Image (cartoon, rainbow, N blue to C red):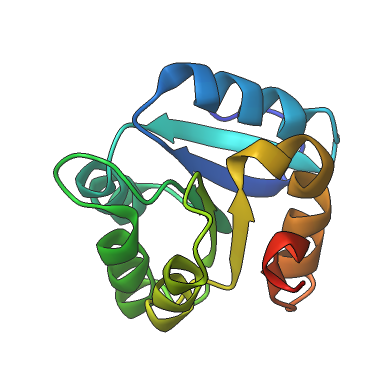
Length: 138
């Protein structure tokens, strides 16, 4: 259900684990500039959602059933290039970051760092910049 100010930045959460979605939603909506417009379990549901509803950013898990986050990112960018994609993952290897960026994601963040980095990552992507968790830059 969409509510709130139409000027809010619309974000869609896609993760197959509801407790993660709850935590991420709470972090996002602590900032009144952001609005979570939906919560989905997998990439296939994401593609259906984008056919009928608007989101300015999608926050995606990599490991999901039916369609993983890398394939979902690729399809989002093919069909909706204006939608920003932020990967939120447990995968700590640079190979996953490279694969996510190759799939079209503008950002990659570790779930364990979400408390500190999620809002800065969203702000960076919204401003047209990329965001890679500092964990990968050392």
